Image (cartoon, rainbow, N blue to C red; front, side, top):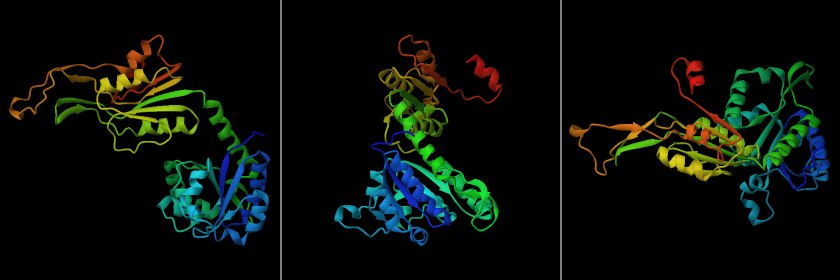
Length: 337
């Protein structure tokens, strides 16, 4: 058992026969010294009572977006802000569908959609509901959104059928939650740096050369480091992606700016260079727009950020990872780099 003292877990209980297992989850989390608050959906109250939940959690049970006792609680976002982690167990096909479509018509879905914390979902439903194409599609969407899915397992159903759809046992769910917090604690002493997106090299005030890159890969890597407890810095070129909360986010334009910010934020334990840095820059930048009739570009080699950091004795991270965009001979060209 891993100590979860000072950890705040919001447990959302949806309607389904597996809802009774939420009592075991609360008991186990409390045994690990976690603070547990709960939200009961309307249908969940058909299977477990607010009294039984509050008796175990020793906290108020929330079941209605408007059931508040003081004005400060009118902000339904307060629960998502309070939690270090949200666990939805069990989650039904209906709630899965709601979250995948961005629907928020009750307290549970509103709090989940308003959260920027780690969210774990433990599905429980009939095997045919689980295997239905719409459920599969919704689960894949939620995975892409960053939700973590626990189970379901293969076993006997309450309806008498056998197959995949059974909620993962409470002790296994608790282990997964404990491991998550333990990893965050272990990784707190580590520092990660990620570069992402394209750089621009300006020809004049309105024109530039660049590489094609959305920055998504680097952003996801940085988010993963952050979610696992690393002190994370993300240095990004121009991208349409939203900044990630909870990390040191730095926006740059040119390769030189990206290099300078990289140096400033080293040393680090691990650095991942995913940015599509422009290989060349303009030799003679014009501070006025060049007329198209006179456009003649002279290029010079740009700074190689990855090569410079890799060769640096004192600043090179213990683990340095570089990405290369290739269109042919992928392995050969990558080995050469």
